[in-house]
Image 1: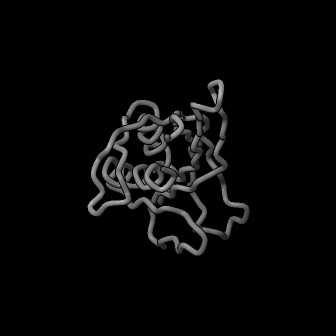
Image 2: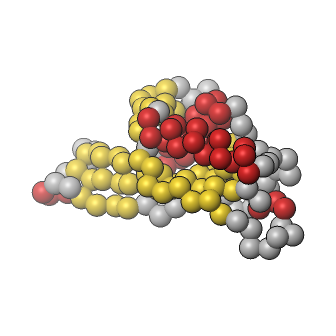
Length: 144
């Protein structure tokens, strides 16, 4: 399910914003041209919520970065992306099939919005960034 949720977020952001969205993983190369969006998996939270371990809960956490070309662009897109994470319903895509059909939907919980300045002023690549911490809460039952 982790793959499906991550892919669904990347795909939805590409379509909703018209901006290239990139799934961050080890060794991925970021584009030189801005703007672009990055989606990175963070630490998941796991728990059981019923007696006998019949029902489990996973909170899938992600950090979504927006890499803007200007400070104004960052401010405008920050508002747009904040609204997307607060209000939009994301299609859940089945990534075990090609093309990936829609098999459901989910909402995101926006937990933080953090603008980040570059550590070195000469590092132009890291100018005008903002990061969104989001969570996708999944509850599911034991398979029999």
